[in-house]
Image (cartoon, rainbow, N blue to C red; front, side, top):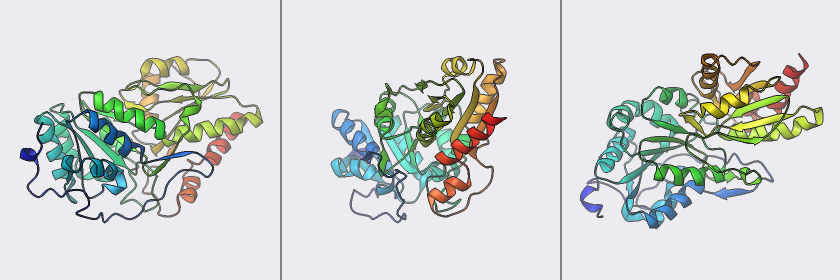
Length: 341
């Protein structure tokens, strides 16, 4: 399979242009094992086995970990410049020619700038494009221009689009393999750089469309996705000291939801159900779960822990996570407060 005839006329190979994006700090807590660039390394490995995989980016290879792929497969890497609409159009064209394009940028740029191109050129045609985006939710301190706090809300209403929100490095590695196997358009949120490893302690395997109960608990059920599953697990361990038993249901596929597993967990009587997500309280996992429960007549005591419906401040991530209620300490505080009522 030759790529040269489909290459953009002005495509730039790896190393010929430096990214202009600012440095983004890792979210890995001290003392937690990490893996560096799990998405980039997994995609580079898969590409050795699958000649149809190609990588594209909009001037952000280093900051989406696609530089690892570019270094190993420079003839299959396309630097599209700061032009997200062109990026998605090129990915659609490559998919039409039988390739499996992985298009990377920041989540704000894919969701806000390139929405119509993704909708009309990719999703409507059910093309096999994988859109993998860094800086989801509140994973950068650079303010509203970089914080994709509403990306899931934007994409949940798009037909044919599968939405993935992995928790850690292990989840990202397995999800990358799974979406490479899956035939259809995918939007995946990406934790990049040094990514924590937490799910290796649990009997967990990523499957598209499947949720996984990571731990049991009698008093509280956390339903979570992305980095908030890490926080829910940490909070559950801390709350053991208060004799509050917390179950954690990890939901890495936001669309389609694993309705059977969610309903089975939520139907268990006597538990407070808390959906926690690294996303605005509007239009994300929390509203998806709430609507599911209402449709099915399941009525537990229900709470959400999510980002507020507002543009967020710039600043240091630990400070922002405390301020906006998604730090582990804030999860613990809220559960204690709700459990006392």
